Length: 344
Image (cartoon, rainbow, N blue to C red; front, side, top):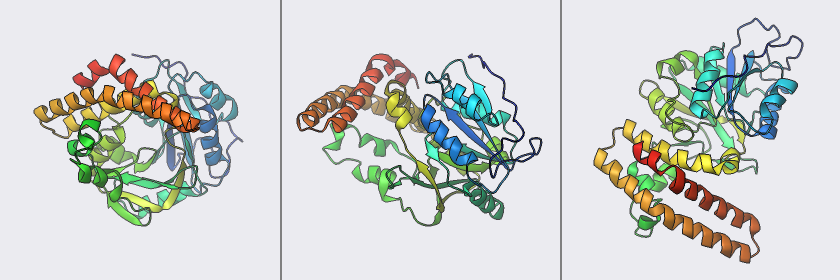
Protein backbone atom coordinates (compact mmCIF):
# COMPACT_ATOMS: atom_id res chain seq x y z
CA UNK A 1 0.00 0.00 0.00
CA UNK A 2 1.35 3.42 -0.94
CA UNK A 3 2.03 6.06 1.63
CA UNK A 4 0.47 9.50 1.66
CA UNK A 5 3.39 11.86 2.10
CA UNK A 6 1.53 15.04 2.98
CA UNK A 7 -1.39 15.85 5.20
CA UNK A 8 -4.06 18.21 3.88
CA UNK A 9 -2.94 21.80 3.78
CA UNK A 10 -4.63 24.39 5.97
CA UNK A 11 -6.92 26.79 4.19
CA UNK A 12 -5.42 30.23 4.64
CA UNK A 13 -7.77 33.14 5.48
CA UNK A 14 -7.87 36.00 3.05
CA UNK A 15 -6.83 33.92 0.04
CA UNK A 16 -10.31 32.99 -1.14
CA UNK A 17 -11.16 34.20 -4.61
CA UNK A 18 -14.68 35.20 -5.68
CA UNK A 19 -17.15 32.36 -5.20
CA UNK A 20 -15.04 30.47 -2.67
CA UNK A 21 -15.78 30.27 1.05
CA UNK A 22 -15.13 33.54 2.88
CA UNK A 23 -15.06 31.80 6.25
CA UNK A 24 -12.79 28.72 6.32
CA UNK A 25 -14.78 26.78 8.95
CA UNK A 26 -18.05 27.13 7.01
CA UNK A 27 -19.13 23.93 5.32
CA UNK A 28 -18.95 24.34 1.55
CA UNK A 29 -21.87 23.64 -0.76
CA UNK A 30 -19.63 21.90 -3.28
CA UNK A 31 -16.36 19.99 -3.00
CA UNK A 32 -14.38 19.98 -6.23
CA UNK A 33 -12.30 16.78 -6.33
CA UNK A 34 -9.34 16.62 -8.73
CA UNK A 35 -7.04 13.65 -9.32
CA UNK A 36 -3.78 14.86 -10.84
CA UNK A 37 -0.82 13.23 -12.50
CA UNK A 38 1.85 15.11 -14.44
CA UNK A 39 -0.21 17.97 -15.83
CA UNK A 40 1.27 20.93 -13.98
CA UNK A 41 0.34 23.75 -16.35
CA UNK A 42 -3.12 22.44 -17.09
CA UNK A 43 -3.79 21.97 -13.39
CA UNK A 44 -2.79 25.59 -12.74
CA UNK A 45 -5.19 26.77 -15.45
CA UNK A 46 -7.98 24.64 -14.00
CA UNK A 47 -7.50 26.00 -10.48
CA UNK A 48 -7.24 29.56 -11.78
CA UNK A 49 -10.59 29.14 -13.53
CA UNK A 50 -12.20 28.03 -10.27
CA UNK A 51 -10.67 30.59 -7.93
CA UNK A 52 -10.34 33.51 -10.33
CA UNK A 53 -14.02 33.73 -11.27
CA UNK A 54 -17.26 33.95 -9.34
CA UNK A 55 -18.76 30.48 -8.98
CA UNK A 56 -21.73 31.72 -6.94
CA UNK A 57 -21.44 29.06 -4.21
CA UNK A 58 -19.28 28.17 -1.24
CA UNK A 59 -16.82 25.60 -2.50
CA UNK A 60 -13.57 23.92 -1.65
CA UNK A 61 -11.04 22.12 -3.83
CA UNK A 62 -9.28 18.87 -2.94
CA UNK A 63 -6.36 17.84 -5.16
CA UNK A 64 -4.82 14.38 -4.85
CA UNK A 65 -1.52 14.22 -6.70
CA UNK A 66 -0.43 10.77 -7.88
CA UNK A 67 3.34 11.25 -7.50
CA UNK A 68 3.70 13.73 -10.36
CA UNK A 69 7.26 14.18 -11.60
CA UNK A 70 6.69 17.67 -13.01
CA UNK A 71 6.30 19.64 -9.78
CA UNK A 72 2.51 19.84 -9.93
CA UNK A 73 2.04 19.23 -6.21
CA UNK A 74 4.60 21.90 -5.31
CA UNK A 75 2.80 24.33 -7.60
CA UNK A 76 -0.49 23.73 -5.78
CA UNK A 77 1.14 24.19 -2.39
CA UNK A 78 2.85 27.42 -3.44
CA UNK A 79 0.19 29.10 -5.58
CA UNK A 80 -3.07 27.73 -4.16
CA UNK A 81 -2.62 27.32 -0.39
CA UNK A 82 -6.39 27.27 0.08
CA UNK A 83 -6.53 23.89 -1.70
CA UNK A 84 -6.55 20.70 0.35
CA UNK A 85 -3.57 18.81 -1.10
CA UNK A 86 -2.62 15.16 -0.78
CA UNK A 87 0.66 13.83 -2.17
CA UNK A 88 0.68 10.12 -2.95
CA UNK A 89 4.01 8.33 -2.98
CA UNK A 90 3.09 6.51 -6.20
CA UNK A 91 0.51 6.65 -8.95
CA UNK A 92 -2.46 4.97 -7.31
CA UNK A 93 -4.79 5.52 -10.25
CA UNK A 94 -7.73 7.78 -11.02
CA UNK A 95 -10.35 5.98 -8.94
CA UNK A 96 -8.28 5.67 -5.77
CA UNK A 97 -7.25 9.33 -5.95
CA UNK A 98 -10.84 10.48 -6.40
CA UNK A 99 -11.95 8.38 -3.44
CA UNK A 100 -9.15 9.89 -1.36
CA UNK A 101 -10.38 13.36 -2.31
CA UNK A 102 -13.98 12.49 -1.46
CA UNK A 103 -12.93 11.14 1.94
CA UNK A 104 -11.47 14.55 2.82
CA UNK A 105 -14.24 16.62 1.22
CA UNK A 106 -16.80 18.45 3.37
CA UNK A 107 -19.36 19.55 0.78
CA UNK A 108 -22.94 18.41 0.36
CA UNK A 109 -22.20 17.87 -3.33
CA UNK A 110 -19.15 16.49 -5.12
CA UNK A 111 -17.86 17.78 -8.45
CA UNK A 112 -15.31 15.34 -9.83
CA UNK A 113 -13.22 17.27 -12.30
CA UNK A 114 -10.34 16.40 -14.61
CA UNK A 115 -7.17 18.45 -14.30
CA UNK A 116 -7.29 19.33 -18.02
CA UNK A 117 -10.44 21.45 -17.77
CA UNK A 118 -11.43 25.11 -17.47
CA UNK A 119 -14.57 25.95 -15.51
CA UNK A 120 -16.48 29.09 -16.62
CA UNK A 121 -18.03 31.53 -14.10
CA UNK A 122 -21.13 30.37 -12.20
CA UNK A 123 -20.78 26.77 -13.38
CA UNK A 124 -20.98 25.43 -9.84
CA UNK A 125 -24.04 27.63 -9.18
CA UNK A 126 -25.77 26.20 -12.25
CA UNK A 127 -25.05 22.64 -11.17
CA UNK A 128 -26.19 23.29 -7.62
CA UNK A 129 -29.43 24.97 -8.70
CA UNK A 130 -30.26 22.09 -11.03
CA UNK A 131 -29.45 19.43 -8.44
CA UNK A 132 -31.55 21.08 -5.73
CA UNK A 133 -34.47 21.59 -8.12
CA UNK A 134 -34.24 17.91 -9.19
CA UNK A 135 -33.44 15.88 -6.07
CA UNK A 136 -34.34 12.58 -7.75
CA UNK A 137 -31.46 12.97 -10.22
CA UNK A 138 -28.39 10.93 -9.36
CA UNK A 139 -25.63 12.57 -11.39
CA UNK A 140 -25.32 15.51 -13.79
CA UNK A 141 -22.76 16.15 -16.50
CA UNK A 142 -22.04 19.28 -18.58
CA UNK A 143 -21.49 19.80 -22.25
CA UNK A 144 -17.78 19.42 -22.93
CA UNK A 145 -16.11 21.73 -25.43
CA UNK A 146 -12.57 21.15 -26.63
CA UNK A 147 -9.81 23.72 -26.56
CA UNK A 148 -10.38 24.19 -30.31
CA UNK A 149 -13.98 25.22 -29.71
CA UNK A 150 -15.63 22.04 -31.01
CA UNK A 151 -18.09 20.00 -28.99
CA UNK A 152 -16.82 16.78 -27.48
CA UNK A 153 -18.95 13.71 -26.93
CA UNK A 154 -20.21 14.35 -23.42
CA UNK A 155 -22.38 11.29 -22.86
CA UNK A 156 -22.73 7.83 -24.38
CA UNK A 157 -24.64 4.64 -24.19
CA UNK A 158 -23.20 1.82 -22.17
CA UNK A 159 -20.75 -0.16 -24.31
CA UNK A 160 -21.35 -3.69 -25.49
CA UNK A 161 -18.86 -6.36 -26.49
CA UNK A 162 -20.11 -6.02 -30.05
CA UNK A 163 -19.50 -2.28 -30.10
CA UNK A 164 -15.87 -2.70 -29.06
CA UNK A 165 -15.28 -5.68 -31.33
CA UNK A 166 -15.85 -3.34 -34.26
CA UNK A 167 -12.56 -1.66 -33.28
CA UNK A 168 -10.69 -4.92 -33.89
CA UNK A 169 -9.07 -4.43 -37.29
CA UNK A 170 -9.42 -8.15 -38.05
CA UNK A 171 -13.21 -7.67 -37.97
CA UNK A 172 -13.70 -4.04 -39.02
CA UNK A 173 -13.36 -4.72 -42.72
CA UNK A 174 -16.27 -7.17 -42.56
CA UNK A 175 -18.67 -4.50 -41.31
CA UNK A 176 -19.66 -6.63 -38.34
CA UNK A 177 -20.86 -4.66 -35.33
CA UNK A 178 -20.56 -1.31 -37.19
CA UNK A 179 -24.05 -0.22 -36.14
CA UNK A 180 -23.42 -1.13 -32.50
CA UNK A 181 -20.16 0.81 -32.52
CA UNK A 182 -21.60 4.00 -33.95
CA UNK A 183 -24.61 3.82 -31.64
CA UNK A 184 -22.16 3.67 -28.76
CA UNK A 185 -19.64 6.25 -29.95
CA UNK A 186 -21.43 8.98 -31.83
CA UNK A 187 -24.90 8.55 -33.24
CA UNK A 188 -26.66 9.11 -29.92
CA UNK A 189 -24.94 12.42 -29.07
CA UNK A 190 -26.73 15.75 -29.38
CA UNK A 191 -24.93 18.68 -27.70
CA UNK A 192 -28.10 20.67 -27.13
CA UNK A 193 -30.73 20.25 -24.44
CA UNK A 194 -31.19 18.45 -21.15
CA UNK A 195 -31.91 14.72 -21.19
CA UNK A 196 -31.47 11.44 -19.31
CA UNK A 197 -28.48 9.42 -20.52
CA UNK A 198 -26.74 6.13 -19.74
CA UNK A 199 -23.10 7.21 -19.31
CA UNK A 200 -21.58 10.60 -18.46
CA UNK A 201 -17.97 11.35 -19.29
CA UNK A 202 -15.79 11.29 -16.18
CA UNK A 203 -14.08 14.59 -17.08
CA UNK A 204 -16.73 16.47 -15.09
CA UNK A 205 -19.57 14.94 -13.07
CA UNK A 206 -21.68 16.51 -10.30
CA UNK A 207 -23.61 14.48 -7.71
CA UNK A 208 -24.81 14.59 -4.11
CA UNK A 209 -22.51 13.16 -1.49
CA UNK A 210 -25.20 10.67 -0.39
CA UNK A 211 -25.66 9.36 -3.94
CA UNK A 212 -21.91 8.89 -4.33
CA UNK A 213 -21.69 6.92 -1.09
CA UNK A 214 -24.79 4.83 -1.86
CA UNK A 215 -23.42 3.92 -5.30
CA UNK A 216 -20.28 2.42 -3.78
CA UNK A 217 -17.90 5.26 -4.74
CA UNK A 218 -15.36 4.87 -7.56
CA UNK A 219 -14.38 1.23 -8.08
CA UNK A 220 -10.69 1.17 -7.19
CA UNK A 221 -9.99 -1.85 -9.40
CA UNK A 222 -10.02 0.59 -12.33
CA UNK A 223 -6.70 2.42 -12.61
CA UNK A 224 -7.38 4.53 -15.70
CA UNK A 225 -10.21 3.94 -18.15
CA UNK A 226 -13.71 2.51 -17.72
CA UNK A 227 -14.29 3.92 -14.24
CA UNK A 228 -16.72 6.58 -15.48
CA UNK A 229 -18.79 3.91 -17.24
CA UNK A 230 -18.81 1.90 -14.03
CA UNK A 231 -19.81 4.84 -11.80
CA UNK A 232 -22.54 5.85 -14.25
CA UNK A 233 -23.86 2.30 -14.23
CA UNK A 234 -23.84 2.05 -10.43
CA UNK A 235 -25.54 5.42 -9.94
CA UNK A 236 -27.98 4.68 -12.77
CA UNK A 237 -29.27 1.54 -11.09
CA UNK A 238 -31.28 3.70 -8.67
CA UNK A 239 -31.37 7.22 -10.06
CA UNK A 240 -31.38 8.89 -13.47
CA UNK A 241 -28.27 10.42 -14.98
CA UNK A 242 -28.81 13.74 -16.73
CA UNK A 243 -26.82 15.52 -19.42
CA UNK A 244 -27.15 19.30 -19.01
CA UNK A 245 -26.26 20.94 -22.30
CA UNK A 246 -26.78 24.45 -20.91
CA UNK A 247 -23.79 24.04 -18.57
CA UNK A 248 -20.43 23.94 -20.32
CA UNK A 249 -16.90 23.01 -19.29
CA UNK A 250 -13.82 23.34 -21.50
CA UNK A 251 -11.98 20.02 -21.69
CA UNK A 252 -8.61 19.81 -23.41
CA UNK A 253 -8.88 16.05 -23.39
CA UNK A 254 -6.35 13.22 -23.67
CA UNK A 255 -3.41 15.45 -22.81
CA UNK A 256 -2.42 13.35 -19.80
CA UNK A 257 -3.06 10.03 -21.55
CA UNK A 258 -0.94 11.03 -24.54
CA UNK A 259 1.89 12.15 -22.29
CA UNK A 260 1.70 8.82 -20.43
CA UNK A 261 0.61 6.46 -23.19
CA UNK A 262 2.39 3.44 -21.72
CA UNK A 263 0.23 3.73 -18.62
CA UNK A 264 -3.02 4.87 -20.22
CA UNK A 265 -3.48 2.57 -23.21
CA UNK A 266 -3.13 -0.78 -21.39
CA UNK A 267 -5.28 0.36 -18.48
CA UNK A 268 -8.09 1.42 -20.81
CA UNK A 269 -8.06 -2.09 -22.32
CA UNK A 270 -8.08 -3.68 -18.87
CA UNK A 271 -10.84 -1.32 -17.70
CA UNK A 272 -13.21 -2.38 -20.46
CA UNK A 273 -12.74 -6.05 -19.57
CA UNK A 274 -13.47 -5.35 -15.93
CA UNK A 275 -16.60 -3.42 -16.85
CA UNK A 276 -17.91 -6.22 -19.07
CA UNK A 277 -17.28 -8.78 -16.33
CA UNK A 278 -19.16 -6.68 -13.76
CA UNK A 279 -21.97 -6.08 -16.26
CA UNK A 280 -22.52 -9.83 -16.54
CA UNK A 281 -20.88 -10.71 -19.86
CA UNK A 282 -20.71 -14.47 -20.42
CA UNK A 283 -17.24 -15.89 -19.63
CA UNK A 284 -16.88 -17.55 -23.08
CA UNK A 285 -17.70 -14.25 -24.77
CA UNK A 286 -15.05 -12.50 -22.69
CA UNK A 287 -12.47 -15.12 -23.65
CA UNK A 288 -13.26 -14.57 -27.34
CA UNK A 289 -13.03 -10.82 -26.87
CA UNK A 290 -9.66 -11.06 -25.12
CA UNK A 291 -8.31 -13.42 -27.76
CA UNK A 292 -9.34 -11.13 -30.61
CA UNK A 293 -7.90 -8.04 -28.92
CA UNK A 294 -4.63 -9.91 -28.23
CA UNK A 295 -4.29 -11.15 -31.82
CA UNK A 296 -5.20 -7.75 -33.19
CA UNK A 297 -2.69 -5.74 -31.14
CA UNK A 298 0.41 -6.51 -33.30
CA UNK A 299 -1.63 -5.94 -36.46
CA UNK A 300 -2.75 -2.53 -35.24
CA UNK A 301 0.75 -1.65 -34.05
CA UNK A 302 2.26 -2.44 -37.45
CA UNK A 303 -0.46 -0.44 -39.17
CA UNK A 304 0.19 2.58 -36.93
CA UNK A 305 3.94 2.41 -37.62
CA UNK A 306 3.35 2.34 -41.37
CA UNK A 307 0.75 5.09 -41.09
CA UNK A 308 3.26 7.23 -39.18
CA UNK A 309 5.92 6.73 -41.85
CA UNK A 310 3.49 7.67 -44.63
CA UNK A 311 2.34 10.75 -42.79
CA UNK A 312 5.92 11.79 -42.15
CA UNK A 313 6.81 11.41 -45.82
CA UNK A 314 3.80 13.50 -46.76
CA UNK A 315 5.03 16.35 -44.57
CA UNK A 316 2.60 15.84 -41.70
CA UNK A 317 4.91 15.34 -38.71
CA UNK A 318 2.23 16.11 -36.09
CA UNK A 319 -0.08 13.42 -37.45
CA UNK A 320 2.85 11.04 -37.76
CA UNK A 321 3.72 11.57 -34.10
CA UNK A 322 0.17 10.62 -33.08
CA UNK A 323 0.40 7.40 -35.09
CA UNK A 324 3.72 6.45 -33.49
CA UNK A 325 2.34 7.32 -30.08
CA UNK A 326 -0.52 4.87 -30.60
CA UNK A 327 1.98 2.24 -31.73
CA UNK A 328 4.00 2.77 -28.56
CA UNK A 329 0.90 2.27 -26.43
CA UNK A 330 0.15 -1.00 -28.21
CA UNK A 331 3.75 -2.15 -27.74
CA UNK A 332 3.53 -1.46 -24.01
CA UNK A 333 0.25 -3.36 -23.84
CA UNK A 334 1.72 -6.41 -25.56
CA UNK A 335 5.03 -6.51 -23.73
CA UNK A 336 4.08 -5.48 -20.19
CA UNK A 337 0.34 -5.67 -19.52
CA UNK A 338 -0.99 -8.64 -21.47
CA UNK A 339 -1.02 -10.93 -18.44
CA UNK A 340 -3.01 -8.42 -16.38
CA UNK A 341 -5.40 -7.97 -19.31
CA UNK A 342 -6.12 -11.71 -19.35
CA UNK A 343 -6.51 -11.86 -15.58
CA UNK A 344 -8.98 -8.95 -15.47
